[in-house]
Image (cartoon, rainbow, N blue to C red):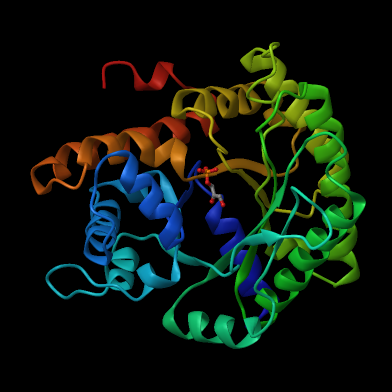
Length: 340
Ligand code: 13P
């Protein structure tokens, strides 16, 4: 795979005001979300839900790529058509989560290290052969008393960089996701300084592993106060802090930044992305996009609840939130959505 093909894919993922839909929840996470709405936690229910998502009419107008899970990339529609065929017919680029989850970091209570490097080269080869064009790896950094440790940040940054280098070798665009969690009562400033430090370390490691920045996408958290922090900044304050942080540490060679939603409501995630694009578009060297799971899927899952009769309405809700985020990339949310 040529460098040019990687660059083209990375650019395509953030082109035309579109963004990514993450639907790569691992089986335990998907089951946990299903349990909330009383949906059976079976392979068939997960298949039916993913079929609902990928067959949503018009999703390709707002969504450039789907991030799939290993189970999902191998699944078929009820009529036997492979999911990958439906996805490419919709003009959407298929990608795959390749990390094997965040596990306890030995000797560091409350901290995680993402696993999955062993055997990754072979797994990437298989996914690329199936038609995946990009991959995702999520590192998790928690904020709390005395954490994160330098050991945790360094180990996760190095794993992200080794993953990214292997992806590019296999012809897959790496989505590099270091997530600083919003759990806790810390102030926004703590998230700001820590995220800056984490991203700095991640880019140091990417440089050391000779990852081509033009052929990757960064998937960071927004700069937010902890969920339990009594002071919650305004949408504009969050936008200002987030763009300030990214301008400090993300090289201009990176074609796109696509945020995770991290537990924000769909409305807030869209409003904050909108404020960033509205206020700072001219100052930003990269495209500022989205790669949301919960902030796009939640209303649809709540409507669906495992009922065949609800599929149409759930798809409507899914496409609506996707359009909201396309509008947020243009800086026209929520005005563009009026009358819908
Ligand atoms: P959320 O948008 O729900 O945070 O998920 C994004 C994601 O892909 C996490 O890895």
